[in-house]
Structures are given as C-alpha cells and as structure tokens.
Length: 487
Image (cartoon, rainbow, N blue to C red; front, side, top):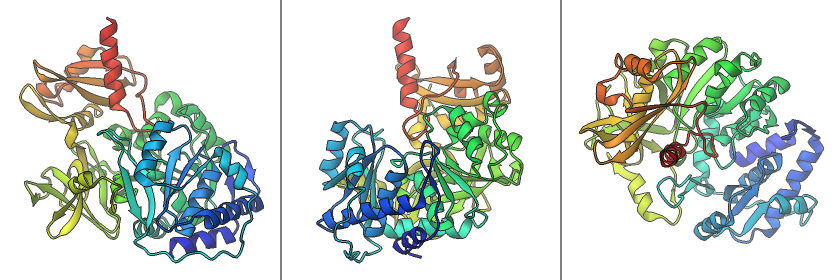
C-alpha cells in the first residue's frame, strides 16, 4: 500500500494517541487537528518543489504535521524546537523552505478550515519525501534527501516482517524526529495501528522506566545507549520491564556488553532486533533478530547486523574488490533506499555515492566483514582507525574486546593526537564493581596486544550523549582536555 493510502486508511480507522504528559487525546480531536494542518498546507503551499520545515516540541502535533506532509507530497525538514536561529537560517539557505511550522504557528492553524474541497496533487515515487540534516561532525551539516520510494520500501518491510506486533500493542515514541530512526515508530503506527505514547524522556533513565511501567509499553524503538542505561544493575533492579515484548535497537553500535545484558535480563520470548543503517540509506538497511545463542549472534565480540532489507544489497570492499568472507573492509550499500543526494553539496555527494560494479553505492565508512552465512558485522568506523606507535588500530574494535570483561559495563575509547606516539589512547569505562586501573590493564592483557590497551583509563558514571542519544566522543575528548588544563 502506498504511503498516502496508508495514512488515509489509518486516520479513517480507530486510533489511540497519548501526549507527552500521558494524557489520551480524544480521537475526534486528533483527527480534527490533522485535517486542519493538512488543509492549511494544501492551501498555502504554493509550488511543488517547496519544502516545509517543522520546528516544534516533540509531541503528537509534530507527528501529525509530518503525516500531513507525507500524505500531500510536501517534502518536510524536521528541526528541533530549540535549534539556534543561525542553524535554522543555514538550513533555510540550503533547502529554500517556504513554510516554518513552530509551536506558535501550530496553535494558530489548528482551527483552520480553508477550501475543504482542495484536491491532493499527484505524487511520483521519485518525489522527495524529507530532508534530514546530519549532526555535522565533519563540518557544515549535510542535508540528506530521501525519496518517497525509499521510505515506502522501508515501511513495506516493517509491515511484512513484524507480524507479531498488532493494534493491541503500546509503543513508546522516544526518539527526536530529527533522528530518522523515529520513522520506525511512524511505520508501526501506520502499518500496525499500535497505541502511540509520546515520551517525556529527557535522558533521565528512571523517567523512561517509569513511562514503560506506567503505560505497560510492549514496543520500544531506541538507541543502544538508552537500553544500556536501562539494563544497568542500578536501574534494572528497580524497574519492572516484563511488559516489553518487542525491542528494536539501532542508530549506533550494539556492543557485545549490551548483548550480554540482554541475555541476562530478557527471556527468549522477548523479540530483540539489532538494526543498522546510515541516514543516507533511509533509516535502516540491515537487521538481525537476536536468537539468544551467542554462537549464532556474535563473532569476535561483534554482534551481527544480519542481512540486507528487501530491495537493498551490500558488499564488503577492499582495494576496490569485493572481499571474501571474514575479511574486513568498507561496507558499501546499494539499492532502492539510497538517498538522492546531499542538498546543494555535489562535492560531498560525489564522495559518498560511488559507482562500483556498474551500480551506485553509498560508501558507509564502516569497517565490516561478513561470514560464510552472509551475515554482516560492524567492526568500527574508518575514521576510528588510528596510528599508535606505528601500529594501525581501530578504537571500536578495542571496545568490543574491553566489554567482554564481566565487570565492565561499557567502554568508549578515544584518541588525542600527540607527537610522541601519534595518538594518545584513552579508555572511558563504566564499571559494575570497583577495580583498580592496574587490575583492569592486567585483564586487558589477556585480550589485547600491548599497543591496543588504552594508554590511560578513566572511570565515569555515564557517557555524554548528543540529541540523538548517541555517545558523543567529541564531548569526552573536550572534557578530558579541560581536566588537564585545570591541573
């Protein structure tokens, strides 16, 4: 079913939506507000190539605005409500959006009626669906253009694959809409008609646990860092998460340590899926259902990301050739879900989308390998591969070994350039029990070569995260450098 028809069908049926305060919004109100937003966009959206920017607090009205854009065929740009005006101005320069719907304007247009007989325009599958901006870790943020056919393919995958999710389930919508994994929640609402609860989560893991308990949430789509915190001993012992039946984890690396926690706290009847995919490949392009059998799920301390979604293909490439099984190389992704381009950035587009074996692929920058069963594993980032004392090492690869130690809850290794060793490696560790640095380095010696062991080890209670919930290595580095200056 096409996305337009899917939205129309869902909004003609019975739906349940709870706002951030946990209040059930009357169904008639949700549908009336949706019709007002849609009609406003129909009447005031002048040109077919224009875009709409959404800059609201994350709640059900933001969600309704997105759906209205999807149905009408207007490319939308998700923004956070607290984006500074300089960033909004920069995004407007790149996208030329003509309408900005923020918290103030959404209140004004909820009573809009307009020309109720306006017809919906025809939409091509090649039409842009949304433009989502990356975090800008490489400089100016890049606007990723995703087409309707790409998101349609992803929604069809969700519908056909997750048949155990039904309209009896309750989904907690946690992720900001500026992070494309939030579209998993949209897909479940549209294809499965789950009851939708908008979370008030603000990086307080106890608040997230409270919402899961109170609303008896059965479906949760979130990043590994949130699940890691949720399954820490301090939190897990206080929470009742027996209601959770379906966990969809992605947006960052699913570590071996997190895998062990899942084995400890969840029974096999809880479905856990490890997703992988860059924004440039429309939400996710790989998926692995966790079997609770380490021999099947893991290899060399890495958790499988499984195979590709329908309509996609992937290769491990090294020296411009497809690597044989178990050889590491860069992951190339091709198929229907690839982005159209980076908006107004042909240079970066040319670097990212390359011709290989007669087809267009996205160079992910992720070091990976596949096994004989054609399951893929992410080892680390190409930009996480550094030189240390003349040796080439990958920081994420090191973390995968560190988290094998039972008393280490999580690990993030960073590198600070210096002249003596090319880089100083620093391991930030969250421990389950007190240990000395000497004890830890001794245990690491049984797993790593001497030059792979972090030069310095620092104990932390938690890791800083960005707005998407991913661990922010840049903040860790700056905090460490600031601490040196204070000495």
